[in-house]
Amino acid sequence: MGFKDGWRGPLEGLTMKLDIPATRGILPKGGTILGSSRTNPFKIEGGVEKIKENLAKMGIDALIAIGGEDTLGVATKLDSLGVKVIGVPKTIDNDLNNTDYTFGFDTSVNIAVEAIDRLHTTAESHHRALIVEVMGRHAGWIALHSGLAGGASCILIPEVKFSVDQVCKWVESRFEQSYAPIIVIAEGAIPQDGDLVTKDQTLDAFGHVKLSGIGEWLAKQIESRTGKEARTSVLGHIQRGGTPTAFDRVLATRFGLHAITAAHEGDWGKMVALHGTNIARVPLASATTKLKTVDPALYKEAEIFFG
Image 1: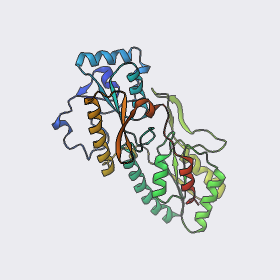
Image 2: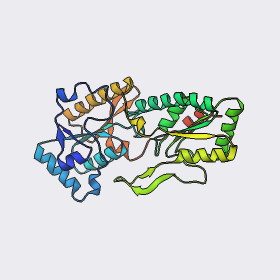
Image 3: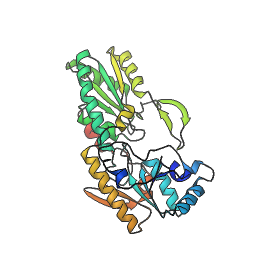
Image 4: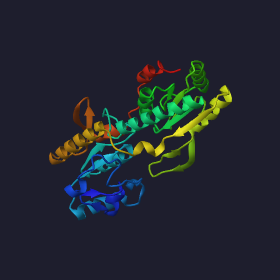
């Protein structure tokens, strides 16, 4: 039995059968056949009690929660309240702690790299600087991996505030080499002496503001300071769709197998995780109380290729 639309499913009793006919052929499909939502039961009066009531009414003993920091954050709280839960890490951001990779990340990086490869062509043809804005609110994993693989002139991530002057120097350096620069920037990147660029101050059910516009802001800064033409390409939800990579298909399959095994053994309050090439079980709280962000030493390695 699967609950539809994230935490809205157990809250409202929305289910679908996950038998062989329903799941056959889903490996090459992106997204989720169950759907998702931004529902947070802890922000709804009586939400947790309603979930417990629905689980009991349906005769469901336990939940396997699949998602990122928000989904598994709710799962962690439910576990502390006595609900039997197992977590599976799924997020393109790769920012869940205590696992080397989350499924969805590799696919997202490959989509971003393909876009960067295509944008190199138009940047060269029109002698422009191109800023590619990718997802990454708190962690710059997508930006770092896609930027390195795509040969970016520089990569800007949320973990390290950037100097606009330095970015402009890298841009000018590339143009001096008769090479159009590509800048990969995470949506949560912050300039020195600046703030997050947001669409508005509206918060979602998990307290997040809508990020939008850092790429466009940087393009204007580059144009005004260097006199060079700059354009922005915001990849947005393109990164979330399409056919999953082989790596993600295998990882998701292995996570699913080990999650079912953990449930069979009654090992509740755990998340399946990738440690090297092995699947391990870690406490849910260890994955959700602190985000996994880019190590400064790793970013230093990438900086060698900037400019």
